[in-house]
Amino acid sequence: MAAPGPRRRFCCCTCFCTENLYVARYRLHVRFQDEQQLRRDYGAVLRGRGCVDAEDFRQLLAELQQEVERRRRQAQESAVRKALISSRYQPARPDVYNLLQEASLAPEFLAAVRYSASPGANLEGLLQRLDTVSERKRIYRVPVLAAPFCRALLQELEHFEQSDLPKGRPNSMNNYGVLLRELGLDEPLVTPLRERFLQPLTALLYPECGGGRLDSHRAFVVKYALGQDRELGCHYDNAELTLNVALGKDFTGGALYFGELAEAPAGPEPLEVQHVVGQGLLHRGAQLHGARPLGSGERWNLVVWLRASAVRNRRCPMCRRPPELADAEDFGDGFTRDEPATLDVCALT
Image (cartoon, rainbow, N blue to C red):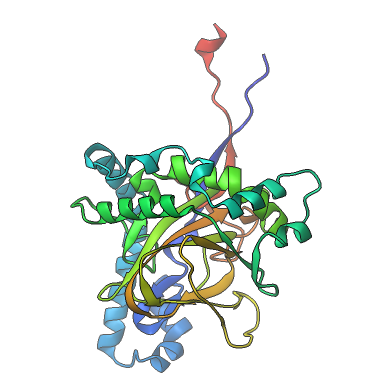
């Protein structure tokens, strides 16, 4: 009997606790190892943004140390929340936890998927089935969710928000929203969306970004409202590609804006893009982007960071170096390494 092949394990890069820490007060992402390094690398920039005296810097250090500690505990605390939610939460819409079906998706999206998966499909043909928001920036819009499913998902998210169960931050910049893995929606909703429906499109749209080799994701819903998060500073995503779907509700303002790629020279004024409920925007994760202030109402968006280990295993998008891998649970941060398979002695006897 042949020996079993290596087992693939998902990992994170050790830079997660030191790179791209966001300081909302100064609208700045920083690398943070210690006070001396912070002063050396960012002292002049911080002073120019209002961090001018000892108390300002003391508060900044406290914020950064708190964020580092949050990141170190993140995986363990997320697992605890997931287990608690699974044991105690009663969904308002159990139907959204069923395995994703075509009836939940917009006809235009399904048509684009079917074309992309057909023999002879090419980029030119696919673009005839999408709305090209920016040819130069390669940003595309397409209806993704059918209206009834969009309403049901939003109803379920609001029901969970109103519960007394613990809720993790969607990411390091947003404070309000839901991690879909913790709510139990990763496997029935996001994984089939990535594997069955998105990958045929992204393989044609972004082949050099691993669009045809997506093997993991991080999915969350973000909420913007008056008195909560109202805007989002300029950033790039820890993903090869990003899908951003507007779920609702009624709101004004809050447009997305897109700049250049993270490592490209500064370009002209950012491109502003309005949200359309039920429709999704596809863009490269390295595309700088943010959100303008919300004017009124509430805005909920489903965001899926799409990851390809074949790409990020060569270069971490956060530290921009070959990744230093550390073991992680579930999909980790989308990096992988092979581990020797264990031989089941009992199976051989």
